[in-house]
Length: 338
Image (cartoon, rainbow, N blue to C red; front, side, top):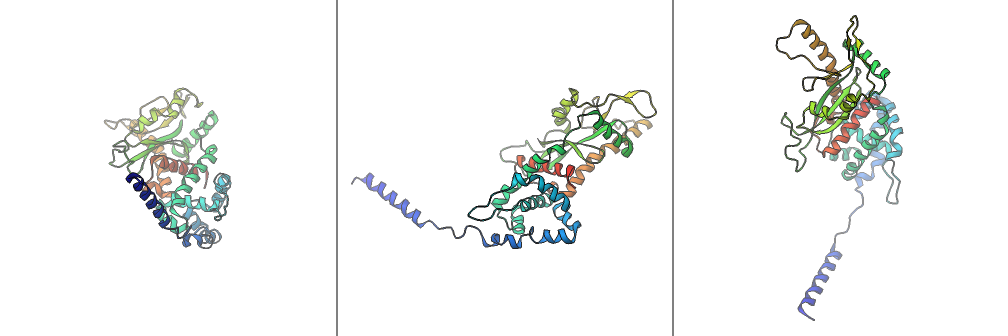
């Protein structure tokens, strides 16, 4: 036998020997996860809170028991998994509770794994799947008004509640802090010195989201994001049926219906911003005060969203696409589920 053949045979024998010595799997699932049915927080704690303390239940998952059931009914078919010979699948209720708890706290997957007795690798698949299902099932609750009556209703609420007539929404952007994505340089680095994506939102007088644009890199300005958004294009092309200009109460000159925003945005026929702060007269100061009072509704909406779902107060250690999915899910829940 030649030297080459001998060497090849020796290598083959070594590979076979290593395969035989390969360590066998000690267990398919760790025992701590096998006791999920009896000891999981969903089976024990949430069941107790549902029966005894609705306020604590809502504090735990950020929705009421009725809201949880409504949401579960809408997405259960989309997130349901089949049982296998290896074991029973994780129930739809557990999947939803896990996702809501993640949004409510921003806890790591490892922390949630101990709480729900679900492996980290499984949690990393469940949360994006449930968020995608929520976005798909709640999309009908979350849309920009397209009829004149819908816009007039919003304008009436802004006039009665915030003393700013002919207003059809408040517009602003919020930076969602993220971990620096790999190989992106300064693309997501913002003026605040952190990495982020931008949530641009239009909000009605009741803090409900009418429109969102999520995912622009943090170094982009709010005004630039709006200028290239499909909302601005729809306004310019007159596709949204915004009512024609009408006089303000007690006046005769017709004034267009407008979205209120801050100095970061460009002045347009249907978008109003404050006067520059240099040398303002009395009437201009009153106007700035009234506009700021109406515009702060969108900032309040951001604050309420972050207070309800604390993940928005953290630097989210996920890729931008998954962060975009999470933020969109939060906006949908806030708008449609109590």
